[in-house]
Image 1 (cartoon, rainbow, N blue to C red):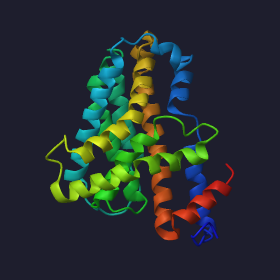
Image 2 (cartoon, one colour):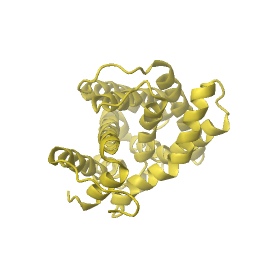
Image 3 (cartoon, helix red, strand yellow):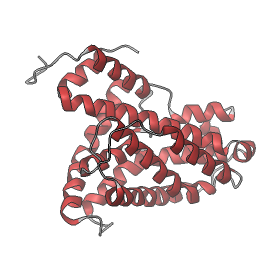
Image 4 (cartoon, rainbow, N blue to C red):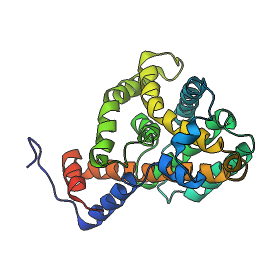
Length: 268
């Protein structure tokens, strides 16, 4: 027993899926991987960014997320369950990164809406491959929620609680946004439930965008490795999406309490 909840033991196959999900969640952060790519800490590269960069990132990130949400609500349907085409979406983002990389860190602002939309489609593809119904508003928002998971903190010593803490922090705004979209759609970007949701996700996703820009601010990295930067970006969010929707699939079968306890007891 775990409090007032009955804890059910997961089947061996599902435990292996959960172990895979945990491995993705505790892997090194995108910032760390980008630091390895450019041969030094990202923090050092941040000094090369303009003073007003954070404001630009904030505005661009919120716009990109809202456009991605619009696309998901209007075009994502149930579809048949099949293997996700991770390679196709990854190749698309890599190609856009290779082109954008030639122009340095300012290209991130221009390229962000495109790469975010492509990645949302990839995340949705992964959700569908895990058996989730993309016609549900809740699933569409869960896809968007993945961007909040990528903003750092999951690879720290508190990784086991970080994932759940982020979901808990967004839970109320997710419910409010789902209710608003179900009744009124997305006609009003300034509607309080949508503003709170986008702001909550943007505050974490913006850290990833800043790290991307810092990597591209290095002349050699920008000209030669723009595609590599976006490859790491795509791979990072695809892994997080896989982990997120494995866990949500198992929660649907066993309940959150059982999955959380099994997750805490797994070693990776």
